[in-house]
Amino acid sequence: MGRVTGQHEPALVASAHAAESSPAQDSIDAWIRETVRQAYEGSAWWRARLDDAGVDPSSVHGRADLSILPFSTKQDLRDAYPLGWATVPDRDILRVHASSGTTGKRTLCAYSARDLRDWADQFARCYRYAGVTEADKVQVMVGFGLWTAGSGFQAGAERVGATVVPTGPGNVELQLEMMRDLGTTTICATSSFALLIAEEVASRGIRGSLQLRRGVIGSERWGSGMRSRIDELLNIESFDIYGLTELYGPGVGIDCGHHDGIHVWSDYYVVEIIDPETLEPVPPGQEGEIVVTTLRKEAMPLIRYRTRDRSWLYQDPCPCGSPFPRIGRILGRTDDVVKVRGVAIAPAQVDSVLSTVEGLGPEYQIRISRPDGGRDQVVVLVEGEGGAGARTVLAERLREAMGVRVEVEIVSYGTLPRSEGKSRRVVDVRSPEDAGNAS
Image (tube, rainbow, N blue to C red; front, side, top):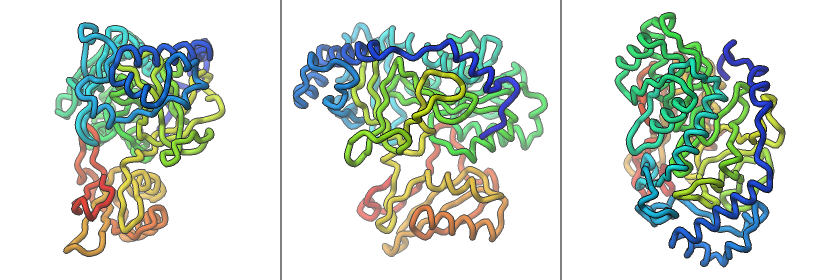
């Protein structure tokens, strides 16, 4: 966890959240009924899906009936391309965004005027949890256009009343110039790009000329090691924001000043955690797949949407006083697992081990090959200053965590590629037949 600044003490967060209230169960039940009705009446795709599942919308009374509703997936969205899920007429669709396409064909998502207002409201709440006020200058370093991130970060900051500096991704020189000349207090970026900015600031020795206090970081899973390095190099407090294009975009939830789980806005979503194999709910504290039903999304509502993100539900309330439930920081995805020698491995396993070995940084890449058609070979490249001792320790701990023997190469800081978008953690050059379940 990064340094908690005096700007944002947990006690102040708690008092700020004390006046909030979670939605009553009656309201949630009413929103669920309306979501199902709207999907059935507004979309031929949804009508067929619910009919095939034998669901009569009039039989759905609320949260207790979620289990009779069918799951939906990203592949369903792709199959209904471009906007088969839309439940409002074309004239009521004010904007269209698309997913990044990192796991396949892009999916399109439609927004009504109300959806855009609701999205800005949710994002503004995220900023407030991070301590952003109208006195802040927010530099948005993520992509604009079809990708949701830039529009969401900007609209939320404007709703708070902060000054927005929409620099977009890339162009490090421009980023540093604006940060210094305008007195940026908050940066918004992917973790990879935030790390790049942090390393540039440190190498140039310009931290003292900046007014940075916090970072709102999202769009990809990142571990505690990367968070600590970003916070240390920039002397800021970073906040982990969650979301995905199908659920408006980023802004679904964020961690508070206690940095123990991500608060999810239960007045906009019902979150379930299921076993991805049995599809049955798991109890609080047990890891599983996040499934989300939207409560107030108008143009493209989602019912029991399988996000593929892995997390867990907290049972106890947060000490910050927020009434909104928490999920754990994202552990990875159910579809980012790669099979090596018959064993399933995931990038999250490297993340968790890296933070236990001194002298190594958070940046890494897993390279999988099958030289000359022989045995699978796994090489983990890690940035750091550790020597042979650190390499040996990391290789042994990775073998214990992954269940397969890997080779470790330690390279200099800055060697691995930095990305302004989502980092590519796994490079699998085996043939599809060899890979089995490739990343």
